[in-house]
Length: 335
Image (tube, rainbow, N blue to C red; front, side, top):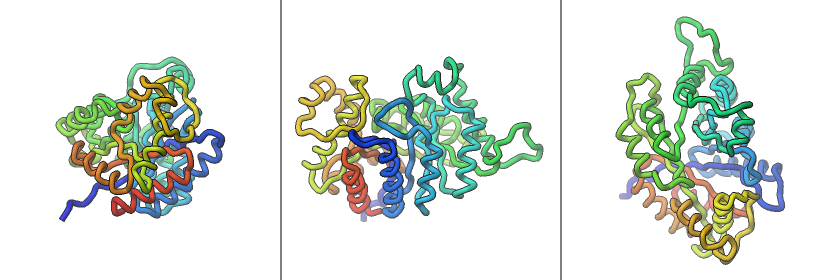
C-alpha cells in the first residue's frame, strides 16, 4: 500500500492578468481561497511584493483577513511577511489581531528579503537600509506573540500577546535555513523560483536543527518546498497554458515586469533563446501536465527533497484555468 501523500498548500501572489485590473485580481484571489478551502488544501498563503504590476499582494494581513471571512477550515498566512520592511511590534499587532478574530488558523511566514527593488525597500523603511537585525527581530516578534510572564513587559502587542501565532522561516538561500535551524522553526524553501540551493539548504536545516535556543516551536525539523504547478486535462494543454508563467519569469530576466500575458505556442520566439534558457532553470522545480503527470511529478519532488509538505503556485492568463488546475490537482492527490 502506498504511503500517505504529504499535505498540499497554495501560495498566491494575486497575479494581475493583462487587460484586467487590481480589483479583478483581488476578487479572483478570494474566490480561489474559497475553492481551496472546499477542496481540502492545507494552507493558503500570500506573499508580500511591492512596486511590481504583476502582483497585487503587498498587504498580506488584509488579504488574509478577507480570505478568512470567506473560508472556514483552511489555514491562512503569509508566505511571507518581509520582516525588514516592518517593525516586529506592528507585525505582531496585525497578526495577533487576525488570530483573535479568526482563531487558530493563522500562520506567520517570515522572510529577510525586502520583496522588491532597493529603492522601494528604502521607501518602505523610510530611509536607507539599516544593519541586519533579522534574527533579533524574529526573536522580538515571537516574544510579542507569546503568553505574558510573571512580570508585565514595558511594551506589549495588544492584540497579539498570548496568541502564539506559529512562525515559519522562509528562505531561498542557505541563510534562511541556518536561521530556521538555530531558532527551531519550521522552514519553507523557495524552490519554485530559487532552485539551485534547495538540496543544500534543506540538508543544512535538518542537520543543524536545534531546540536549545529557547525559541523552538516544533520538536523536530519540518520542511516545505515551493513548486510551480499547472494541471490541465492533457499534457499538451498544460504545457501551452504554462507559457504564461514562463513569460512572466522571462520578465524577471529582462527586467520588464508586466501583468500576466496570454499563452503562446512558441516560447522561444516570444522571449528569445537566452531568456528561455533562464526560465527553464528558474522554474526547474515544476510539475506541469495532466493530473497523472503532475501527481507523479510531485511525488518525485517529495522523494527528492524529503519534505513534509508542498506549497504550489500556479499562474494562468485565464483565472478559470487556474481554478481548474487546483481542482484537478486536488482530485489527483486525493485531498
